[in-house]
Image (cartoon, rainbow, N blue to C red):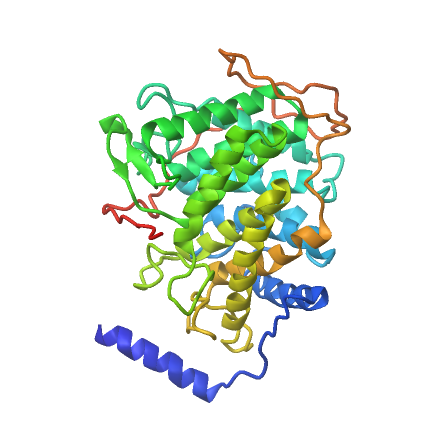
Length: 462
């Protein structure tokens, strides 16, 4: 405790000795202001990226130095794809494309042997989600000699579909891929939520009903074991050695967000079906636990499980980024949610921009968006979270709903007993990239970064 007190004193002293010479000022009604602020924060995000320097080990290209894990790099590049799409700023296009292609692995499915120590289903999926955004927003295509965005996401998705585990809990994806990995016996919301979201978005993009059947299957399984309860709270995971009979009730913002965006894609895909509207509305209402931490911080986003008590780790500092990202995309796919989501994003963006007033530059972003200024915290996660919530203000002004492939007409008619196999394309698509086919990669040990040994129940007060 004494050391922590001294560390805060040093931060305060440094702030006095190096006063801020600039600060971010966001006017949420002014599109030019939003773009300018997003540009400033994006520059801060990219300042953490040093592994594209001349002489860098090719295995490191596209990733970030420690303490940032490989999955967060995929998350960052997804954010930078969106930054380009929402702002039109091409500054980072080549860097983003280079990074996304550098980590595809020998089978073009984001299974990097070099990353075997940190590659779980969720880690792999965050790269897939970035590629999906590149596909949906018509991000510039890779060179003809490289795998194309659709090739990459289909290859990645196929690996995850093949891992659907019926041995325990009636199905579900494990957190980790191999039995030697810490967390292998944990079936968690983020791994299954990412697979759900990828399936829903691929169904919408390709028009292939098999993807939508998989999305339905993942949703039904998640509800059946209680990772999503009757109030639509999304819980962290369950131990499959207990056949998922006990739930870890820890709630993280990105778990809520990943299912939100997937449900919005299904709502859009099914022509605004009442079933998916009910599910989407329930998830959005349940996400209120991540807003309004105090009476004077109405509608401001926070990481409820760790932020107030100061225990958020490096990974968790970025989780708000993904809730903000997926809220914005939800508002586009399900227009009826737009007003409520806009209220949340606007208040949160103002708080986030106010937090970007620290460090040597005077515009580094902090963790707590309800303090009216910088809280002394800094990092890639804080920077990305601020970028995501600010640039999401542009989504309704700049982009229509994400593209579909060619002239796809979305149809939906699941059978009573759907065949849940690996989908094939419904039409010939010109893809000059190479095929990953039957190539395989053996991977090793992963790391349990944030598996909790305790349970926190978060209660929403009406």
